[in-house]
Image 1 (cartoon, rainbow, N blue to C red):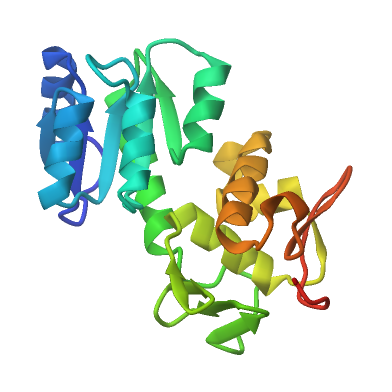
Image 2: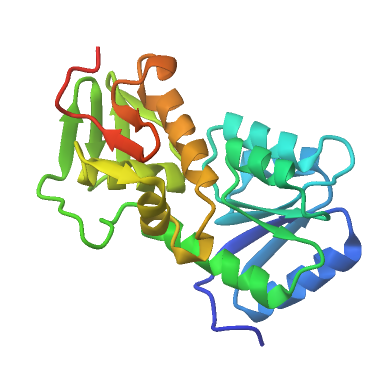
Length: 245
């Protein structure tokens, strides 16, 4: 058995290699996860129309539409299910593009089932804790407002102009952390450690990518951001002092 028992979470495995699917299914079951599997991106999209998963393990090299395009379409369905991508080569560009379109983590083949399960559990922990305050922060008000943006910590909900904004778990946790430290400049390293943890030390590009995603969703003009400000050479500041118009 690998690791402790999971809490009956369902994992969708998207991979066209039967040996990989068999290996993952066995080890995930042993770790206490439920497993569903499909072999193509189109099958994954069809499955997700009528089913839900707690996390998706996605191979990048798939017949038909590849893993990156599949993730892009999943996000287009307003699904914020966490995704771990599997890649056969240690390709920096694949990783960056994967994060840009909404993946939460990656693992290079060949991989250890033990490491994959550890990463799955880490991503699920971040997802489950996404609505909880990060250690060392204050949350005196459960509903926050700045201009036309609101954050309801009790409902785990973000609205802009009264319309619900769909955020991935990492985007939501990032927004909460920035808001908890509003009007203070935060380094990329500090944000990375607080939101993703020390396992991701040095991967500050992840912060930039997720900041870009957040701006696309909450700024009136993402190219001229008024809420999430860039402090060149240092990091970012969540601005509540000036009107975001």
